[in-house]
Length: 126
Image (cartoon, rainbow, N blue to C red; front, top):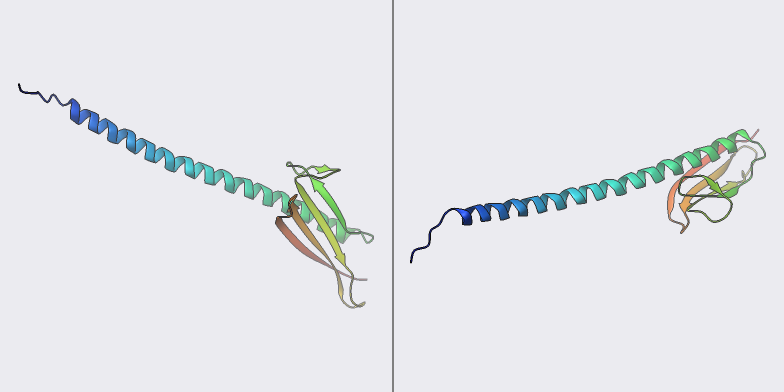
């Protein structure tokens, strides 16, 4: 008895290759989207840290009686009273003599002390 080849075998093979191609392309796209999401989150975190550090630096330069501090922030960079997701520490280093500059070191970090951004600001003494 003869079997007839009516083309269904070729069609099924082509369909399997099409599905395999779709799965591979989908996996690559998902990986690209996941990487883009992670980079976006990191960029957002750095932007918030830079803004907080710049605000602290401006406060330090504008206020002659400024003292160092530690502030805590939530995930939306709003100040909270207790432990938050992020923290900013500003430490002032006194000048060695009257002719040198006083400086402040600002560190913005996560709650588990992973540094996100740091800034050193110097102010001339009057």
